[in-house]
Structure formats: C-alpha cells, structure tokens
Image 1 (tube, one colour):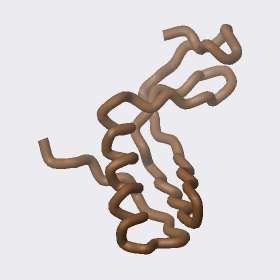
Image 2: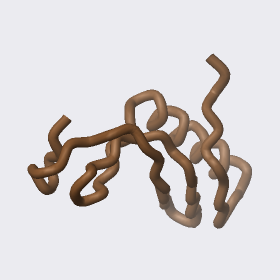
Image 3: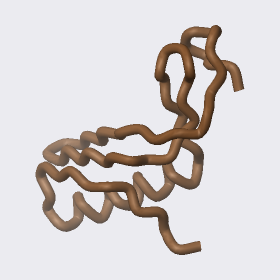
Image 4: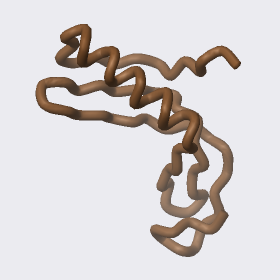
Length: 77
C-alpha cells in the first residue's frame, strides 16, 4: 500500500517497536509485525497484532506493571 504519511513510499512487511502508555503504565513492545514504509519508515500495525498488544497492555495494567520492555510474541493460532 502507499504510505499515507509521506505519500511517496510503498509499505513492505517488517517489524516495529510500539510504546503504549496509560496512567502509570508504560509498555514497550519490540519486534511487532507491521507494514513499514520504504521511504519514511512509518509503520502500520495490523488489526490482529493491535488486538494482541492491547490485550497484553490490559494484563500488564492489571498486574500493576509500571514500566516494561518485551518482545512481541504472536498468540498461538
């Protein structure tokens, strides 16, 4: 797909780092699968990976995590 940010690059499968913040929680997830623009580097995370990220953040918040850095682990299919 054409990048909606720079409008010049095409996206390609790659990985990105996502930072989620809510109240006292900061969760950094590395290695998230995404479509990444070849021109500007903007990353587009798909709906399934987004769902997993939000679920992981909810679990971390319930566990009282304040700051955590982790690798993305896809849920078993």
